[in-house]
Figure 1 (cartoon, rainbow, N blue to C red):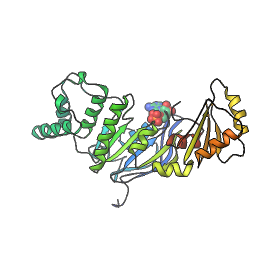
Figure 2 (figure 1 turned 180 degrees about the vertical axis):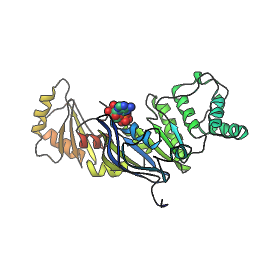
Figure 3 (figure 1 turned 90 degrees about the vertical axis):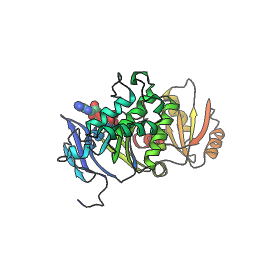
Length: 313
Ligand code: ADP
């Protein structure tokens, strides 16, 4: 296989469960050292795609290679070079952090002495050295997540794959995880992650695909996606106590202003290059929302524009 082939390469990748299609013919190209994200709502097909890349689920159709190896025939060789952080922590809670890492390293056939050294280094990397000899059951959710990341690094993988890495964590714990993942990226490790949080995708991903109903709705860097699909600014109008129908009527009154108008069940969005000017136009039409604010466009807006739905429903 030629060396210039991307680290992860998929063409018309499909996964069916009976008559249901979980992944519906996607193409992927992930380069070495990238942080690559799958962003989409629940059920979009993100985890299914990850499982196929991780060689624990077989594609129903299409082509998929990872690290230049064919997933259909070289699963064990690929898996040996991946680090996997599953959605649910699967740590052994009754033994210490240090023991968790050493035992996991031993599964990879790493010698005991090397395993111990690596466990120490990795605990240091995820800032858990001071808890090396504590049982895992005593850790907070964020600490468990960092330990799971350390465990995924035990075999010195080329690619680390994380399924919803910060779901369920509080903001401070999320930032700590993001910061460690950023360090990994700096070390040249390729990061693949799924998320339904647009801020996580914006923070971490060099490139991402937006998935919806098993397909790729759009692909690019966060900046490129925003530039291609939405305006620079978004004005949000909220109307307390108004029904969806009333919001549509209000949206009609905004016809012809210098912005694209989108009426949602709970608010109206104006996609505008100049948020202040759009706000003046709202005032000019004698519309008085209970709140009116202009903000920067986000990936959430991109998703909404592409699918007509919110990422988290
Ligand atoms: P996401 O990770 O984006 O939330 P998933 O990949 O988990 O989405 O699921 C995509 C679709 O495939 C969903 O409709 C889900 O119900 C279905 N699915 C996932 N795994 C299985 C399975 N083992 N058997 C049957 N259907 C599945």
